[in-house]
Image (cartoon, rainbow, N blue to C red; front, side, top):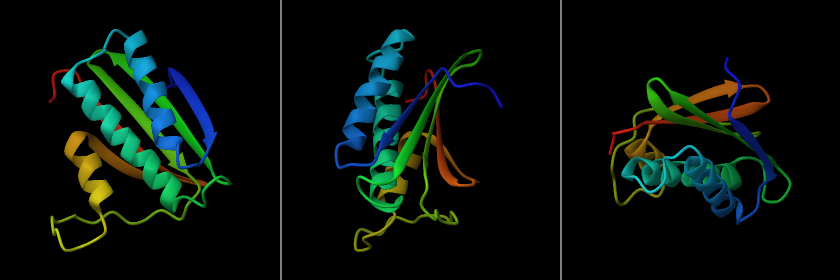
Length: 135
C-alpha cells in the first residue's frame, strides 16, 4: 500500500465534517486542483463520509476519525480514506426511496465519487476516489 500524501486524525464532533472539508480543500489547492467540479464532488462526498463516521462510528467526541489523502499524477486522481472504529456494515445496493430514512449518505457519496467500503480492524474505512475530468 502506498503512503498517503497527508493524514489527519481527529476526535468526532458535530464540526468534524466541516473541519475535514476545509482541510481537504487546502490539500487540493496545494496540488493545483482548486475550484474544479470534480474537487467539489470529492469534498462533498468526503464531508458525508465524515458525517457518517461521527454519527455511526462510535460516539460524538470520544471516537477517533482517521482521514488519509492521496494524490496521484498518473492517472491524475485524488483518493481519500475515512476510517472510524464503528461496527461498519455490509454494503448492499441502495435504491432511491424518498420515504425511507436511511442510506441517503451512501447515495450522496456514491453519486459524487467511486466508493469502496473496507474492514481494516479496528477501522471501518470508506475509500472515495475521483479522477480529474470526472464531473
